Image (cartoon, each protein chain N blue to C red):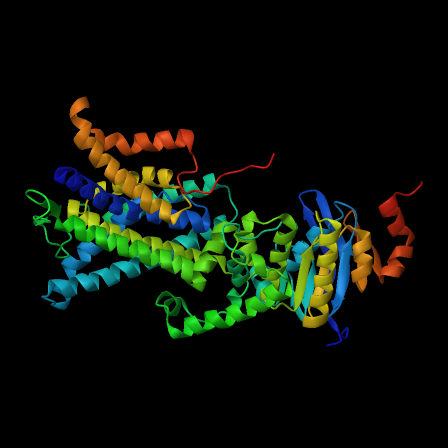
Length: 260
Length: 309
């Protein structure tokens, strides 16, 4: 499948978010097109994670709107976002530590499970069949991300890089339309970063998933993304293709420091 | 030897009942991080409902059969516990999402007093009896093996069996079903669970409801042993050392903790009691819990708490 960047699927308009007196985001607007990889970059504390948390509904912005496939949301909440096909990973990995890799990924199928609690409790045919179907899908994802060898391991025991991969697997299990990745490569070594870049590109290419990703490693971002938004101190200072952004003087000064 | 086995079995059977009450604590703590102080009150409330409805139903419906009246009363009481769970989630927990543990604990303390009062207002505050037809007479078993055989209390035996079955069923439910997996997910990380589309509110209702049913079964068993009265609330206090011993986050911990305390109590009472003048049974569990708090605060099976510095 060759991917074709499509219409605007997610549109953020004039989003502002503050915590007490601190303005985390000020009047930010940008859009995300279907099937593209959209990066949000910026120095530490620029408001990247806040932006992602607004899209996902963890934070409620004081002003602005989120338009998802033409539907207007004043604010999201994480459950609503999940139902609307938005999945995410977390910067500080939020896996279910006591559970096995397989169980963690299976939780991602929760919204797609239709059997009710009584069918499950009495282990009835419908619930059993459903469990098997979802298990098959999960195995596909496990193969895709090359984590077959750790499927029964409790995630708490895995090294950091693999935990990040399981986090991605759980999000993919939701078969999301939009995937939000919060610093997918933070704390990884070069090899792990290369693997992760490859997975991100493959997900986008083979599954057609729209990806919004945060990263502060410029090199990685420029390689994988189609368009980039640059934030600094909660304001948008650049938006465009990687090359355009790279040449933007404001962006350069935010990253390298300007001579005043 | 025969006598020792009798004490041991007696201890195991009592222990199983402690486990049952402890399980109520563990379920709620795992899923919502709340130490539910109201568990004891729920046991009393459920037992009162059961006792009173089984008393009223024959009059209302003209049902003569004790068995049928009991089953109807059980269904009504279970439904009542569901309503209680739903109301607690709606009116209290929903508004306290992401609050400190201490805040939630205080809230359950409030719930405990409220349920205590409500139960006694609605159902009365006398001593009532629950008669689910458990045999009271003891039986002798293994007469061929030991001289005089082993004396076993049939009522305790059946109660322990019911408790064990319930515990096993719940453990299976938690491990093997999608809802169980969702429950464990919520227990581990609220935010992550929400972001993959697990509805927190529904999960909480389910957990409190299951804890309510566990309270009902515990209430029926203890109620038919001791009579339904206010002191049932303190049965929950007996389960506190059990959860400290077993770990607040572990279902197997609740079971093993209950068995250890049940056996420890009985054995120490019988064999050490005479040396110190008796009465060990009353404080043994708390003593053991204290020792655990000093040397292994997470309990036998609880998750180790490792803080990043």
